[in-house]
Length: 226
Ligand code: ADP
Image (cartoon, rainbow, N blue to C red):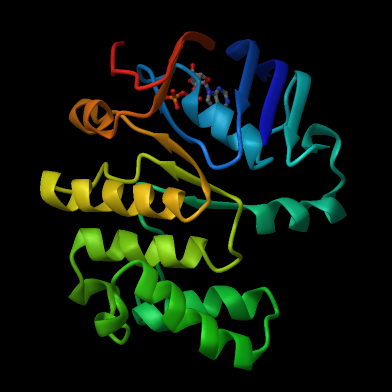
């Protein structure tokens, strides 16, 4: 479960990115975050992954208040929360397989586990047949699938997708959204931040709308209205 209680974020210089936000996301929920540029969506995500700390308020992930986490407690969060971005952040000189395997090596996981898990996650994202292709040999949608496979290696409870379809054409974008829905149905809490109005209205899940640092709408089967 994710819970924000009275969370505000004021950046140096006095810019108020979030003001007294309360938000609860239940395990296995699919939540779409929408709002105009500058509304505070990225800040909210950065707070959940502890890339930023709140100026005030508490943030609970899986029952722990992460706003008071010490550096040595961060691996707890890195295991529980996976993230993908608009620019896939893949290593260009490594194949699909190697991109996923490398992330596991960096976490010190044993070779035996890497050899077992990489094909499994590539299968979940439908890319097993292109495991040995390099990013430049793959479409944008396929590259985003590798990024998703890499985010899934820790079997995270929570997956955050920050504008994951921003660089994709409508067909690839919709395929990625369907994959996110599938990952959610397999039991992962999903937080999707997007500007893609058509997608949001097709997904028919909870929509949280942020404007000027505050939640202005929060609706089950919500629509993109900003
Ligand atoms: P969104 O993701 O909805 O576009 P952001 O969370 O990126 O919104 O930004 C919210 C507000 O905080 C904006 O006014 C933005 O300019 C400001 N902001 C974001 N990051 C920083 C930062 N590191 N330093 C100062 N201001 C920032």
